[in-house]
Length: 445
Image 1: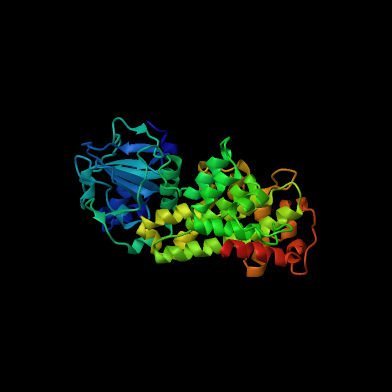
Image 2: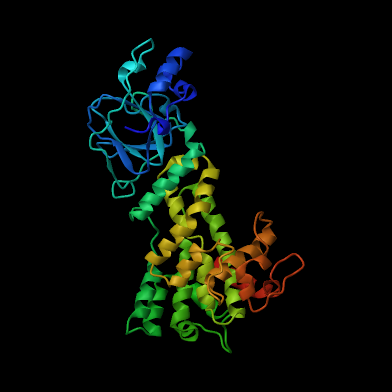
């Protein structure tokens, strides 16, 4: 038995939150409070077993509980919700397993005490589940949805609560759970990029076979030829065939440019509202990529085409989040909710996508650290540094609030040229406006 001095008892104010006790007199509440002990549990503990016939009722004082039915349907109940004003999953045998999703406080109460009147008080000391045990809620059976339960245990379809602030936490939980267990739908690398990558990696790769593969996608072939003839790459003569362009560019540059051009097809959605987000993300990615490309050409030691990809794909995690939103309409009820989730989770998800695509580690690192403004990283400038600098430079032009000064971030001190304009932008980028415009045109045409 616990030391009485360490035992926490429920307060009258806490009891009045629950409908069965709301109308009790102060004297009755006082008697109950002296007898009812507050139970606590850490996250990931199963406190009620599906099918159990235990006699106690569970009331949630604080925290989050996950409910899982026999058919696998999962829900979340929070202590602040209407569903927590009554006993949780009170039908017998138990229709749900109840798992703690956070540290929780709860009461175990004899059913006789739920009836108004001077019923004798009996301390509910028995465990609600005789074989309570720890479970990994992020395992294969995870995926709790934010469904609210009615008092009788049925699902409530009211979408008005879906935009509540607390539900963002549950979206994080659900996405994070799917991500951990490789269940989150991630975009696939476009076919043409996969084919070119495979050809270039093979021992039989040559400009002719690669040109044939590129020509299977006329739009990509036209972009590659236009790029080879642009001021960024053009030599003394103009190229009239894809094969000649590949010879001029080299296999490595060709692969990176093909991947870059193919990415446009990934940033698309059939949902008009979500497609607006996609277009906004794509435009921002092009702006960042144009700057990272130029920064890499100015700062030796980095591959400009690799930098172009780093800038273009630093927000690729948003694609998976938007795809998730397409199958979870409650995320669309409040645009701020979707934006908040993207801002919080895009880096981790983006890094995972690029690893899945088997991109170089420096590109997945760039996505993961794209908004870690004060990340020192390596002594030498890297692709993550370029993405950070490009976004801060753009932030001044767009008037984005709450961004640090460029001169205050570690990446700035790795630059070859650390001169700033009067408004705090990078002088080397201001002076390269024509080159930046050329790159942007290649990506948008």
